[in-house]
Length: 348
Ligand code: SAM
Ligand code: DTB
Ligand code: SF4
Image 1 (cartoon, rainbow, N blue to C red):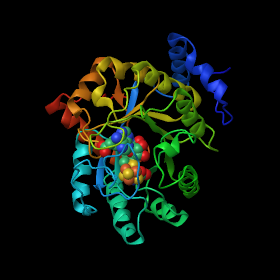
Image 2 (image 1 turned 180 degrees about the horizontal axis):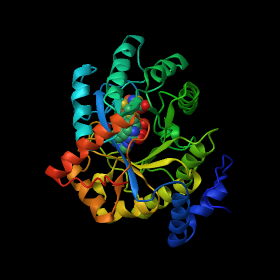
Image 3 (image 1 turned 90 degrees about the vertical axis):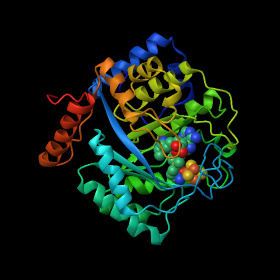
């Protein structure tokens, strides 16, 4: 089987065969696929901001922001646009190229839309790529976001269709697929992945990857989260997933969706440098960068910069904006490198 073929007809058996082969063979196959489509020493970096925190009506069992989970999280209304811009400026100044704004909503209400659309326009005008995750969308809302210039919409399938109702009951798998259809039809790029380590079986992990890879078009970006176990959520005491199972899933995702960015997402704080490096070898080529995810912590920028330096990894630059915007952002990064040992390779 050619390693980097774009396919949408994966069967469970085929995914299992990929997954269960000897580790070195799997890693080799994933590297071949990765090198066919990407600069394998480049990682894309995105920074997250929670623009509306907590009190979410959905019942996602993993989530610290569900109103049903007593996690002691301080809730916050939708942030002012100025606060969002301040955070985006900081993210840009430390070398991030994409700013992802997340809201603890089932779906945005019509009265929220003008505010989030302003956020999109202003962050975009700063020369950063934009991403939002606001819950389910209507076709009309997806089009409004696309028209405002939103580059990516994140909406995860989270797990397999079979395991899904043990994790969320307040909306269906089909609801999620519908939102992904609206996002794709609006012209935005799709970011969709899931969470591992929620007590699912191996076949559920294969099922998640099948559901993603068998979409009409692969998601452009595939976040693979390791569950962050938050006290007060129903999953706080679930057993840890073996690290090699996680790395193998990254490798299988890389092979099944060879042209997509695979993001090593939540859970990096609990992973040592060696584990993260194996994930990059397996084909992960994107991370969340910055000391906070939405409500939980993430490794700080300097430890990521140090790890990238050890591995000879550069951050991927934004290619879609004008040379002027890119030069400005590059200058920011070079300036940073003088003061904080930032590693960006200005020659690439
Ligand atoms: N409320 C919107 C939604 O669910 O579509 C957007 C924000 S929600 C927090 C985005 C994603 O974060 C979820 O789909 C889930 O995959 C991930 N997530 C939430 N809590 C997590 C946790 N404790 N560990 C890992 N990933 C988590
Ligand atoms: C995704 O797949 N992971 C991010 C982002 N998309 C929005 C969120 C992770 C959240 C982890 C728990 C928290 O910080 O609240
Ligand atoms: Fe709400 Fe999103 Fe958390 Fe589910 S994952 S409870 S929808 S914020």
